[in-house]
Length: 88
Image (cartoon, rainbow, N blue to C red; front, side, top):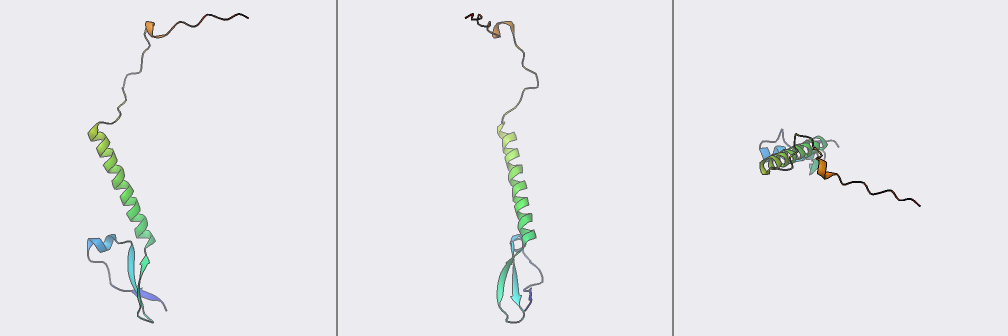
């Protein structure tokens, strides 16, 4: 009772992106769907890469946070004098 492939291969792009494969039992001729773990992982990775690329492009397009190349400098009047010491 080993299931066999229902078709030789997916023909359309939508069928290629489907994470499930059609199977048919050779003994009882019943059909069912089987989850393809490798295809599911590949689709998840593709989704994450596309989402990351779109996020990066959107941040670059909108002009997200940009750091200054120059290091900050402290001027003379910016540091307040320390408080006087307290003797008890």
